[in-house]
Image (cartoon, rainbow, N blue to C red):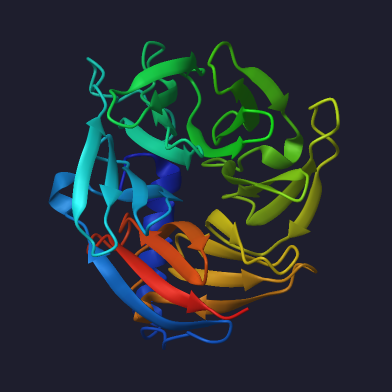
Length: 321
């Protein structure tokens, strides 16, 4: 997740992307097994700040998304219709002190089995930054503060323990918070979570007894066991050389996963041994993909258009198992 900003790290990223685009022709479609039938299922309004950052799927085919720039949580119907569920209050300073980015944004999102949505909001101010909850038909409410000098980004939910995990991309920390709310706990501050100057720990997923995290700057996928007492185990790097990695989704084949690569405009298929191949590119409609989710045999990929500056969208593809 990134946008044209005054921050030097982003400026460098924009220039690199522009040079690469000028030097290389548009990539050919990379759709290949186990994916097929990729198509754009919904377009979002960039002028309204509808830059999708994270997604949570619901039974019946609806997708819940955070629109980062618009500070919104929305529902996208199976046919692509958008219904705004909540718009978060803008901080008095406009969010200019939000670390790394300079604007307020809604980020990580999960859906509990009862339909409750939990999501993250980063503003650079102590009164708004943190974990928020939105019950069906209700209004959004902050249930846990997070450090205003950080950037809460990815969010994961362990429904068995009622624990939320939030990745801070600036502070290199994974926080844990009960779904009932309260003070956060620094669950892991392992060095593998740190940034290299822009964004570190990013996407999060619970899978096979562990919390899996991506590191945007380092281009890595990390596995952190959840011990029986709930504490973090030792971090193990499971994949490397995935530049601009944001969100991930497991395919159901062991530890095989799909990864959204923001800057390169790609989705990669990552095997359990860490090897990976490209399975979607900008030729398939990707516009800086930020999030990815899987329900049944359908893969949902959301793009924000941070660098391309056009056509934030939702792509659906079929996964063959």
